[in-house]
Amino acid sequence: MRTARLNKILVVAGGGLLILLGLAHISFWHIFDWKNELVHLSQDNMGMMQIFNLCFIVLLISLGILILVNRAEILHTKIGKHLLFMLSVFFAVRLIAEFIFPGGSLWLATILFLLLLVFLIPAITKTA
Image 1 (spheres, helix red, strand yellow):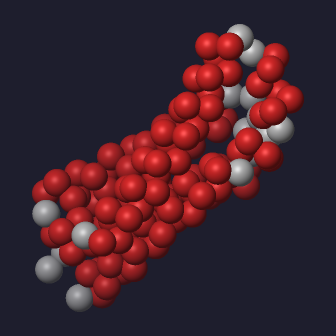
Image 2: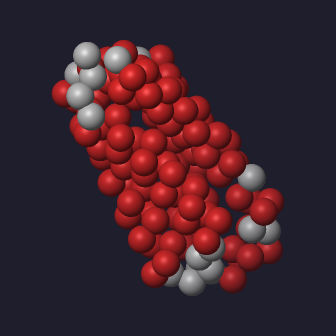
Image 3: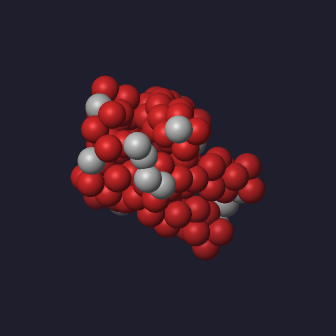
């Protein structure tokens, strides 16, 4: 019973964090001064960065809403468990990339590690 409660808390937290992460990506244009920084890229690369970020915002917020609205199905169905596991794989890859590519930070790596656990724990534990 304790595991089921923890998994429910983690899934709700994960859905909320995905929405917050999507909202945080909205500020990338300002935070990273894309108006001035992206002009140094080719038109194709500048467009790709902005389109990728915009699509990623939609994906993160949509996944967060999907998880929050369907948390029982996410926790108790095979496809829900697979979704949680794939999100943990995504955050594991993103965590590794934080150390491979320039500009990585320990505080962001910590957040990514916590997100990995938020999705991995309910993905691999059995719920009643």
